[in-house]
Length: 521
Image (tube, rainbow, N blue to C red; front, side, top):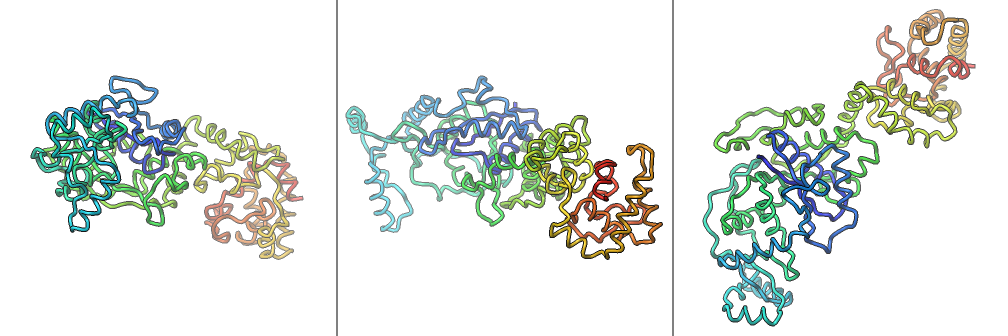
């Protein structure tokens, strides 16, 4: 069975780069009928941040990325915290020592720093002189008996030969041993493993078949593969993901609060929209790399995925193709999230029960924005969502886009006065009085009234252009311009619409007879 793992460190909140990595593991596993594990890599206790594991789990739950095994979902692969697996790493380090592929190093930090500096002055690229590699068994035993602190180093002078590496994303990789430290440390003096030993041991013990991780681990890949070869255990298939960048081009990290998943939750973005966004931001053209289900086959398509395709999680699984992941680092574009989120909102609102859940989601936000209003009901919010459909990029923007539904417009505001200044007093009065009189004269129930037809008739009776008529009426009813060109009126049979603005006839319908007449009076 295909089995993957998402292995974050508990050093802070989950950020978008981590969310994307979890998403790719989820999509790959589900695409191939497999499962994935949440593993917490907490071997560096100096960087541990209390509460971060709960934060990671809550972020994954919000996104709908349900892991199969991990904290809270125990199984045969546990424990899922590396700090609870220390005996396992010590055992594997012992195996490497016994086979001659590792050795104990008793050098102090000060002596190591001095050695490194001496090697550099001599023009050597080595970082260690392998002093402890040449110690006799008696010397090692004597130091061990004396309780001398030591680390365990990998012996890179006796690494078995192995075939070239084929990465799922980058294809065949060049040998990068030259970039590795000299005989890297595998087990630290506190008996905690380094990432290199822990990840190899855990991936093997847990039965991981495919490892999808960040491109920053590519330089360490030769070491990991050498460890597999030295331990004589099977190697998983690797795929390294190019990293996400902040808009300024810097590497995305937990130090940038604006890319934390918790912030996107707080801002009200739709979880599937955020997943859709980070997935599409990492896709480019298909490459000739081995298909994961059959390493003997390759794909050779030149299709470029639609960078704004709207997909739910199931669609993402169905269409996911690891060969389409770009080789380039990717900058996340906020405008693309707005576009994608808008369409996810529309789709959710159209789904049974979706409109209700959206209204409930934003209810507190609306009430806090209009604390003295009696109209901040779930029913009014639902109506607001419907008339703002196609314009609403974030559900929390309702108070900004449609305050006139919840409170009377401030006609003394700068925006209202600016609108009013572009209409003659005579035309303004004719429109307001005319529409008021026509509405007062009708006797049929408001819900049965053809408001659009009524406005058509009044405009024709007044002999005014659509532009003047609608500008005057919108000013009186809402006191607000729309986000885009107010004068961009659509065709006559839809003259109540302004580009990207809610239909004025719909606004009147939602407000109701008494509230509309009160404003016109």
